Image (cartoon, rainbow, N blue to C red):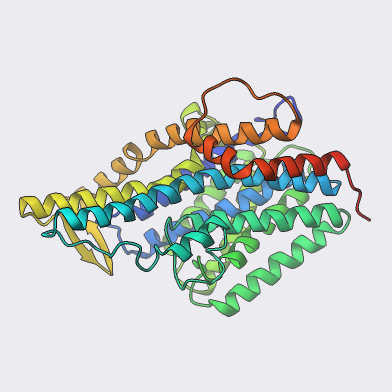
Length: 416
């Protein structure tokens, strides 16, 4: 299989690239520029990318850990690594958003002529909401909406769904497929009961949304194990999947039909996991592989960058007496030429503003935190290298968690 490493727990390179493309499409969806597609149903349907994320996570984690989680200690180590993967960057971004709120206080005292969009530490940015974000609890219907770094809601629910996955694999290895199927169906049906008008829930029923797609990904991975490792007609299957996803995004209305997407996503992931068609060959290109490597940073940092961009445009327009921002459906958007010109600008800025910063974020925050956790859990010495900001935060907040996980692994308790 292309993308398989010598370790046996390989990477699906086409799926890595798919994750990067989805992250960039989420960036395009969120960029605060009024353009020709803003508010149209196909553009709104870019939110399916989040469901693709969840399904990808289920598939990949089932591949990487489905046979390795055999004891309680393995499960604790797995959760420590998931924590190291998701939490440090989340904390860095939360700290940066807190700095924005502090800067609002300073700005109000120095320039009273400029009206801010929101009061410092107001709704969505309170200290209580910061605490729930620190604990990854912001997506359990506690606040009535997104808080602080909005996209982090999905990282929070993915952490807890990953924990549930580990418990199932450790405790019920022989019945896991039935449990995956039951949880997938139950989550999908319960979510539809709670939100029949849209699949695109977040801070309220986001846990159900994540479970629906995540366990669909787990199921299709287990079904893939029965294959011979080859696809018949891979090019036809890959093109068919690409066309189906494109049509689904372009024509699917809000409501019930949206609930078919997690199942479609699981099938698409299964097909592209074989890495055998012409589209997979394109997805294995170095540029798209880098995009996949940086996908979590792309996803987590972009709203901070866009908030700075929107505030700068608003302030510049105020000083120059120009209308550089305007309200559209309760959202303050930057105005750049005609809607068609603005669409081109949105496409370019989504890449230019976010991707380079995401590369730095991965280098200085994500990778050091994961390396530190991996070394701590394996008991090996850490390489001498300067700590990134994220790694310093990881060391400060998580050393105790890592030591506990390593100790628990050493005991190797076998559960009945």
